[in-house]
Length: 203
DNA sequence: AATCGGATCGTCT
DNA sequence: GACGATCCGATTG
Image (cartoon, rainbow, N blue to C red):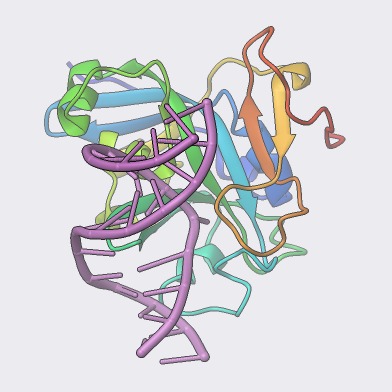
């Protein structure tokens, strides 16, 4: 059976990186593997532009090249000798040279068996942590620069539930040593869950 | 519950 | 040659 998906169009990614990071919450990441589809709702993101914590800060290199490339593509890099991290290239191309949104967590919707196998454990309620996420979704170096607006790429993003601002916590990014003051991390909170920062950007 | 160190390697200085 | 947009298991309190 052939499934059709309505992917999010490129315009969506051609906006300020911070706005896209916020708006990716609730969107749905789809990965086509040998064993079938793995699908999840994005619940945590971080924005990286040309700030001091960004790979793009020192300018374009071979590694970070896709951050400077067309929006709506993937930027996947290898780190700590172990892990891959997945970003969505996004920026206002009129005003910005480089930008990407790191996907840090999502809630599994489909392909639970595949996730369990890839992660060698129980199915988590939330796949949290950029390295764990790429492991669960079989995302690796070959995925770098894939077009996330095309369902042919085997890695793409489609519409999902809208997330109200009151359920979005905005905090500093995780694991960085520079630009710690910037509140560029966006995470969906449960109703009743403690919100670490009540600040919110205007959309 | 919180902290610590080992794993492991591509990229940039 | 140093160090990461990390993870996990072990240890300690």
